[in-house]
Image 1 (cartoon, rainbow, N blue to C red):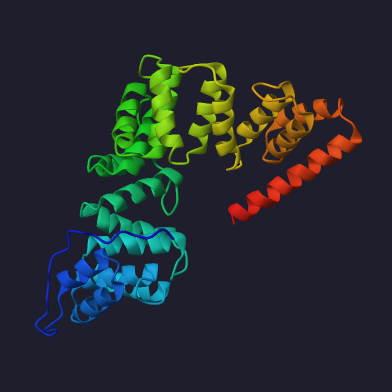
Image 2 (tube, rainbow, N blue to C red; image 1 turned 180 degrees about the vertical axis):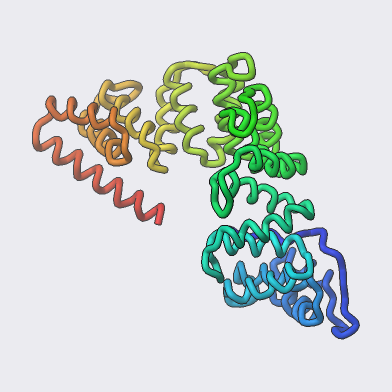
Length: 340
């Protein structure tokens, strides 16, 4: 489970029954990674019913910070705070029910807690509630309701909600299809560093949807997303370099980006690397290496690569095919180690 960030805007609430405990001291300690001190300050406050301290204790147990990781204990503290109307705890409790950590997975219960937090203006809960409506989990699928909650979170500058709202406008789900509106929301999220939005904005400039077609602008957004590890953007950068769109044609640069995408199992990048080695584009022609890449791409479900591999096999010796298969096996073993 990804670490949930401790809020920097919790109020200082010290119970008269926990003299000496200092919520802000705990918060300052947590910011510096001193979670043991944070625990020591928050625990007595939590016992006295301070919902912010209870919520933050839940985070410590959730993340295993300063205490052994214990999802059931996290749920206990989240619930105590959530029952007092603490929106952060309600949102986190909803998440625990959504993914089944510390409690049995229960989408309806997740919806309940997300809605309580969302009604209090919690943007993460609004976004997550939108996701559940979009996917029909715990509720009937309802794109209009999903859009409603995404919009509330997006208006609070929650980049994931802005991305999803852009997607809804792009595909006409719950709203009229509107590429210009999609671009608006993608740009807002992209400007905050959201790699998915940067990639999608690059696509819109690449294809001239909602904006004038502009390969250089597409390259700009692809590069920002690619530098964050977005495999689709890495692949598209490779494609732009190999075709000289928005940049000078550069096979070496294309290979660099294709390989980065391929290392994440992106099948089209693997296939295109096969093409590069098959026909010697910027590299010496090498049918063994080409076969390896085609074979790997086919493994990841690329039908064109399957066709390319079988056509190339007809031109290769049994010995070379065996060598290419060995190389593919070794590549896949390394990939599986990296992605465990």
